[in-house]
Image (cartoon, rainbow, N blue to C red; front, side):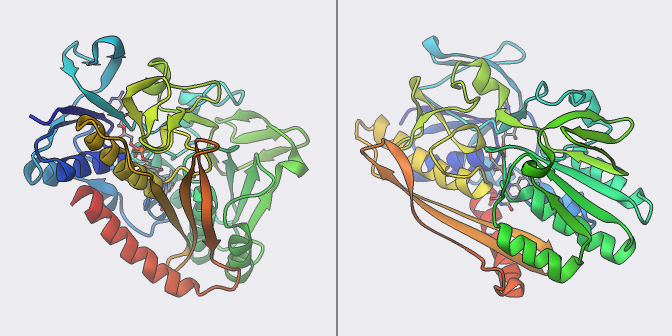
Length: 392
Ligand code: FAD
């Protein structure tokens, strides 16, 4: 056998790693551990919330990875890692041994960061920042909101999953409201003073939605101090806002398992060597996707996919006693601003030996007056090819 690689988390990072490990070395025994029978995609979920697609479109099956690629899928949650013995321990106590471990557990929320906003509160005022019941709940609330109502979205501080996501969500909700409840408003209360693709978002909002979408910088409102989910109110340092639909996107950190396994630093994310995505704390454990923090790369499905390929190649090399190749990584992220209009941002990241970190080699984004209809066509094509690349 070529070695045993275990992957924890069957999202965009983990599923890509599984596929590419097997493709680069068919002799590897590759095990993918994920509690869900099928993965639920966050990309596309803002469209579901705005009534532009149904929840079924977010489901990704593991059948192809299992049947075509001979990847062993274990449907279970990992309870803990025994890193000194190189064992993964499942919730039922079963152990799975590894030579190399890939962790792609995604994010968890900092439930202690905003007074009044804990997991119970999220069942009333959803975050919808993990796909599934939260997506459906926010979609229902938007649908049953009265015309003339206020949708309030709180956007988190950096770094967090999908930097342009809150603004895409605001755009698509406005797209729905303009058609069905035209006296309503979308307000974004931000923990930041600027945001991803800001010039292109703001131009699209002006052109498409007039004053329906409003963004308030933290410079103006200060800190988000308190949330009352039942009353649907949000208090900042200077004001209180009452919403009809309240969508709180809380501050984030690496998925709990990474935290509990001693793989995070004081930032709450996992520091890695970007040549291989090996944890700086354990060379046999690689962390990819949202949970890791490799320099300036944003947390996106595209980044997770790019990192998974670099990580897979480095693992195959290391099991053969070879050093990793120098990587070049890409992120290219589309945001829909209406059902048929989109904008995008691109970054290319290379390894800088001096800093032992990734640095930006080139970048670009849709200009405020870019061709948003053409970008929407590109975005649809990307969605199709990306899905195929990861889940077949
Ligand atoms: P995930 O995809 O979250 O996968 C993690 C997996 O790990 C989960 O399936 C989970 O069940 C599993 N897991 C966690 N803990 C355990 C455990 N203990 N044991 C076993 N399994 C475990 N990105 C883009 O590139 N383009 C987009 O258009 C885009 N749109 C987005 C829109 C929204 C609204 C949101 C919220 C995000 C969007 N993203 C987008 C970001 C993208 O969803 C994430 O960056 C991506 O999913 C990260 O992949 P991951 O593998 O790190 O984590």
